Image (cartoon, rainbow, N blue to C red; front, top):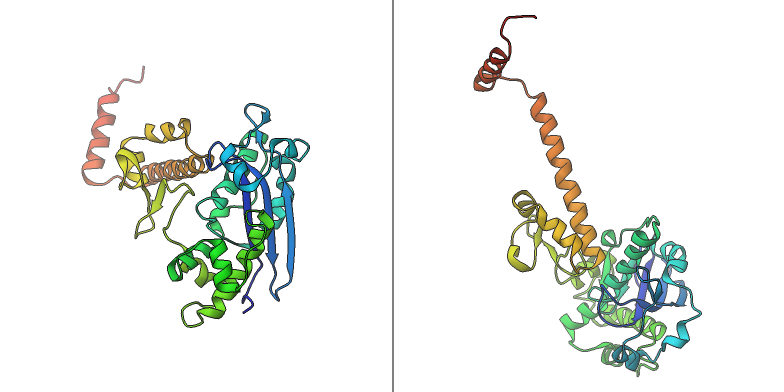
Length: 303
């Protein structure tokens, strides 16, 4: 079954130097953009993983190289992510997103690379990945038929996945699996990105690392440490230095940015409340207190 699309959807997959979102980097990025009408566009980049603070190439961990087979030497002449950022953004701008296990790794890693470009290169990033609908095909798969991508491809598509862990092969396989899922579960799944995004979303998170989540009232809540379970607003009002601790700690740039945006929101609300209080008419006890203060300051002498 072809996807029922109101706007383009971008399937993507990432290979990286390792699994640490905060310290590792993208080395291969593949996009398969499906337009309404099922036209497909494919783009794959090899990327030189760059340490912007140290101004050097990041090393691939042995465990990661054992999976994807890409070496440091193969990447030394490739563009840095900052060099392809404009093109990546142009692919992202008008699209919803889809991937396999992407909400846990690929999406946070992509967001982290964009934040590095923003922070270290001073570049404006006109896309907000948090605002995009995300269909995680693995989550749909695990709800209905718990397995991995290779087994999912065999189960839904009836054939073996060749060249697994190559970004383009994995991305195309993910696209085929989602279409087959729609064919297999017509009574459970709706052919709608809105439905599939909600169906595949396990937890309402604010940042991709899950340090902040939404409660039932859509209030951001701290999801770790001593303040776990408290709203971010409550923590800001009682311990504003906690937000500085986050910004200076070993957290992903995306996590730091979401805390910063919340801090800016709370500070704006405080300023607006202060302005409103100044404009409020003085009545009753407030009026009497104000008059008494003026009497104490004014002695009756002009000179």
